[in-house]
Amino acid sequence: MFAFLRGELVTASREEAVVEVSGIGYLLHISSAASRRLPPEGSQVRLFTHHYVREDGQQLFGFLDEGELQLFRLLLTISGVGPKLAMAVLSGLSVGEVQEAIVANRPETLYGITGVGKKTAARIILELRDKILKIQPAASGKTAGEPHAIQLNEDALSALMTLGFPRQTAQKAVCAVLESSPALSVEELVRAALTAIHNNS
Image 1 (cartoon, one colour):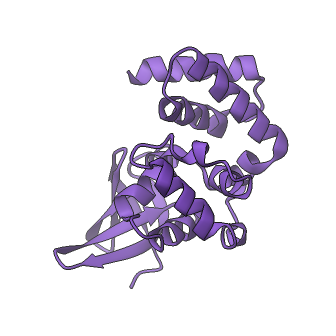
Image 2 (tube, rainbow, N blue to C red):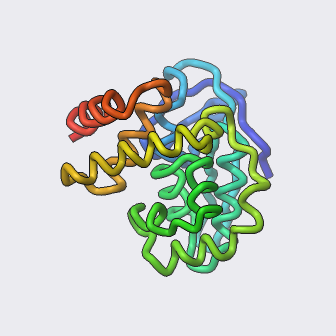
Image 3 (spheres, rainbow, N blue to C red):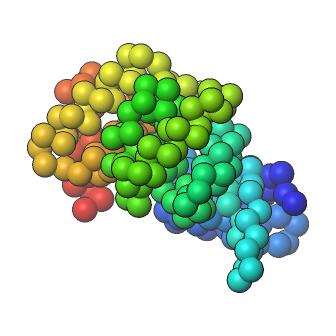
């Protein structure tokens, strides 16, 4: 129905954004990862959209790049995965990290996400293995898929989990730090992620 919306970002939270286009305010459900990358309220923004229709209502989902949108739609093709769970995956991992987990057959990366159990993670890997590499992540997503960045991400996650933090909490903090400062060492990344976790607690 809609390919994308371009307009003024009126309000934004971790899960929703309102974009005004020609005097109409559109409510879009977004991932927390996308919310961190949105411009300030009052700025112009373009969000790719997916119009989800079910018997009891309709919802619009918004994405900052086509890679996120493509991954969201692929996840919806899997039995037992609805839009809420698909958005949880996008909130917990970048497109590049999901690609790496599927290609490397690492279900443990996926079942650290809230709502994704071991069976669902295995099903995602099995059903998307032949399709996932067709997605072209945005520039920030590609960084996460490069070998050095992947190792840096895993080393930082391991350190944070050793300190007692849940994988999902650690993953969100690491992703947030890497989006703004991709050239950190492991030690610097862990310190910055710890600061981000404490600031959000």
